[in-house]
Amino acid sequence: MTNNIVANAKSIATEAHSGQFRKYDGQPYIVHPTRVVELLSKKTDNPVIIAAAWAHDVLEDTNYSRVKMLELIGPQAYLLVLELTNPSKDLKGAPRATRKLIDRMHLANVSIEAKLIKLCDRLDNVLDLATSNAEPDFKKLYKAETEALMPVFQFENIDVEYQDLLAKALKDL
Image (cartoon, rainbow, N blue to C red):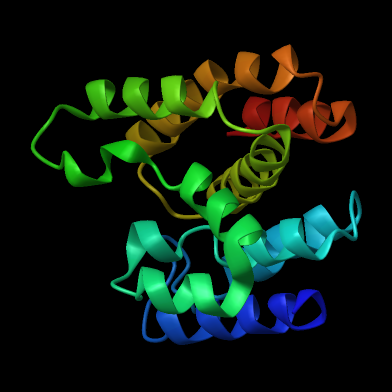
């Protein structure tokens, strides 16, 4: 199954995000997980981690079947996707600051593999926002939220190169 989980996860992400577009540049959403996987692939060739990176936003942003995902990518990659799924996604009525605090507290307690994927995810989002037409107030908010996440990555000493890239990208945001 390990040989197929990356291909299966890519198919899941492509299918689940079909018809979705990035908010600030209008590109098909699948470009985001593709770039996250490209970043991550420079750090690991572990198929479980790569598969989870492909599918990292699927449960959070789509109605894709959890059972089907589990069957296609296996329990290890599926559990990583669960770790990457913000627990506040079902608290849409709560204030954004409260939701982000809940998500940050959750992320502080996930595996180092999930944190590495999240670091690549956040790096891609910040790089994308830096060149986008997003409102300056949103860029400022996203920058502050990302800066609040930095200790989660530094505590585990996760990939210093990507931490540095993210810190530099935040200065440009």
